[in-house]
Image 1 (cartoon, one colour):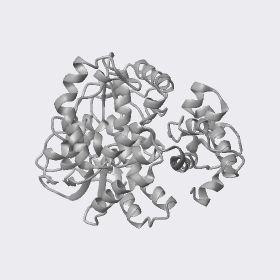
Image 2: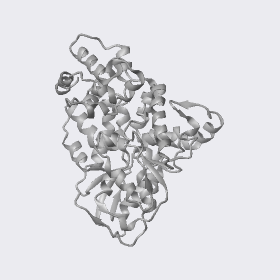
Image 3: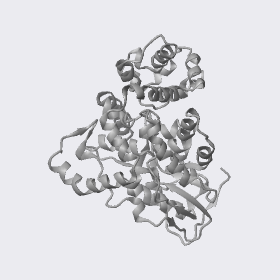
Image 4: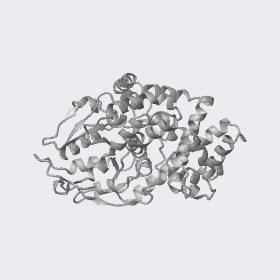
Length: 420
């Protein structure tokens, strides 16, 4: 059941329409029911017993990126995104999950199945997609343009404790699935930077998928095992922070676990304790003065704001500061940097035409900036952008990769912490 607190949210809507002017999906389709205002009014009628949940309503509810643009633009403070997520959970009992999601989520919630799947992908995936599925599309992305799997999972390449030369502190590192299996250089960069800051880095081997793809589809019960496992591993008092490099994983650990537990009537103490320590790598680095440790990188770089970093976690300036302090790097702000890239996890699979139209606008903004590199702190955004920039001479990277490239090795950290 939707908690009483969220049910009351529907009466906060004053139908002003400010959510519509900023909604990327509404801008493409231009009809009321897909706008946040329209969805809220439909949910209101359903909760009042005046409408039934139908297949069409189910389709409308999932025609949403959950980018939270509506929430941050609502003058009444209506928690539109949380209402949408709770309603998706309500619909699950009646409509269930598509078989594709059931299969994927079963893998994501079982580390052994995930490891086997990755091994099969490493063994057979590359030759098959090059020879047999070259033009096959996965949503908006051509299969051949998807990134190759890491030769080895990142976590298997390091001991559980990676010590700094002269440690001044200790942190936990939540690698997430994408860094562990797809973008190992992000992980190498995070560890190099943290060690350079004088941090011992603990990388728990048994950490699981954050579960966000599962519970965003409404399958909260299915995600609980992942959530409990991660909370048990990362709820430690002997570390000063839990570092994340992916905006989506950060959103799950810092915000969603607490909300989901509260809405399910589960004690939130452990989730809140972890949330209090979770911090994106860009925000953690902002605590330190490292200018004297950086060498120049001659690149023209722009930045895309991930929804889960900008709106869910409220982080905007720190990634930009990470980039602009690098000597010789030319940072240029693109038009609409804070607009969703159109990926939205499974959204680009379920609504490829809408997704593609939104992504095209983002690609055009990147091209217009004249940048050689676009940086973003979300693996989902990186996948969406790189897949649609595959025929352009523009690289997509995590900001921490550029910072690690610029950071000189030094025997001592030589870095002072600020009061941030």
